[in-house]
Length: 158
Image 1 (cartoon, rainbow, N blue to C red):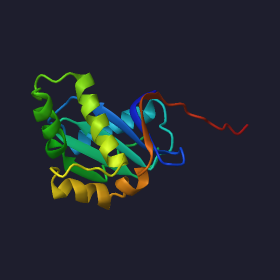
Image 2: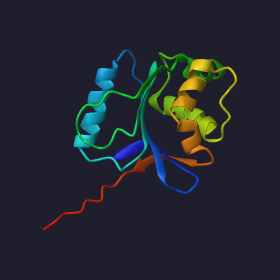
Image 3: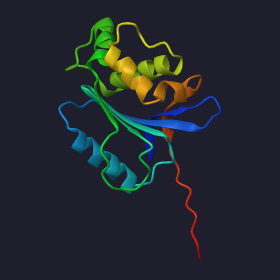
Image 4: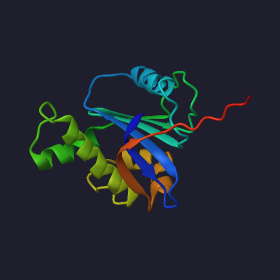
């Protein structure tokens, strides 16, 4: 299974797995089912955080475990204040952005979170969400990898 992004902490441990979709208008329930489907097709490695980044919403799970059942996101946030400045700067509309360009936006934003350079134009709600979830502290000083193949190590008791 491939993750769009994996964020490692400063000690090289996986902290966040992020999936990016150029999709809009889906509910937290849809996100929970999508995460469940990912888990049922190959268990994700243990990570404190799991993020589904959509054009209009971010869904974040914290300490949700790897059981393949729908679990509601721990945090849900309007993605507009994160995405809009990047779209405006690039001159690309949300309707015309390619999946790869949207991934680049999310990578750029995640890197700003990693290096505690959350843009000043991001609303306080975003700053609060990043802080309250513990995400900024967990990833601070870490690094980001793109399109990481995730492997499951299974121990079988015979």
